[in-house]
Image (cartoon, each protein chain N blue to C red):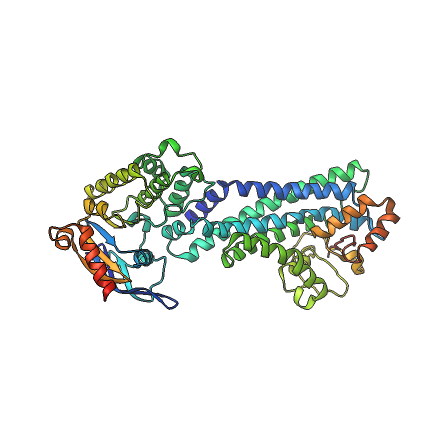
Length: 236
Length: 286
């Protein structure tokens, strides 16, 4: 069974067609890069997969079920959509404990997740004083609380400095090494190129290409393949 | 559901605004009680019962803090985008909202109960030290009505925050509406006002306002709350019937009392400021 199945997915906001008849699958145990220019509909698609936005048409399922119907969603899927989605007055530890409680997870997972992203030393500091990189790590820790086999990450490297990017790349490699399924959207093609097995490229809400990295790049770079595809789409 | 309620309690406890608003609610009630006993002048024709009832009714002062507490509960989730985490943990949104309502209602109940208890203790000690009568039979009903009313305002705040997600806008609108617009509607357009939260609150506390038709739900009535003694009072004119919990009125009274000397001067000063605004707010327990 596929980890994620997106079938003829569409979403319209007023007159704007954000996602248009989009279909692709994410295979289990692989890292899939979800690429597209700004405004391509990546975030909207991820939010529809996670049941946060209602599709205008089509469907998105995780292991054959809509997210809303998952019995234990935090154990099935870990997601990071906004790196700064924290109450600034709450400590990292309290944020994780509250998320554990809401998801019916044991409180000890908060400590373990803090350790996994190297935030134990600042666990009791208010998130308002965190750097962007620390917030990204905390967001990842939140996604890892339920030890999910599937991770959905929206621009996890956004705004990170070189140290942060290095840490993120290592982190994604570790996840891939553990055999987890990862769907990661990103603008940083060189980073995706180093960790992704499969790639899905979208523009203007439509699918441009999907396949293994080797198939799409055909010996060239992912960046060149991406630019060729998106420019051709814009020209049409 | 229990997990979600537990998570909401943790979220409430872990931010400073909850503690500040809770402390504010209690302190505000206590300060107004002390002011009422020692500084504010009695209104003309006010009975000893009215005075005692009015002093204990200061427990109602917590409502605005709890309204804001409720508003921050939902607008904060949208402002900081933490609602996304909540909906990821529990994709059935109705459950998230229900858990939030339960947690906030219970917390609001606790805060308003503490505020009412603090008001009662302050009132009793202050009245005793002033050598005045300390207690009336319907004081428990007044305090229970204040606690129920403030708890309902917490839920109202949650609902307002869910509809108006911009925090500043929601707090400003709620303040303007509940503090001024509803007050005017209850008194000057009672056919509409009695169906609004402020009208219902006054009915809950057993107000009798001449010419103002309120819903028949006074807290002090035996049928509404067994065990609490019912008292009846003659209807009074609007001069006596203006709501004492209204801050602008209470402030007006405070200034009138501070800047005039003696009861006669106070009455004249009050009347000079306008019949309603200068009124000595009084409730009449039903």
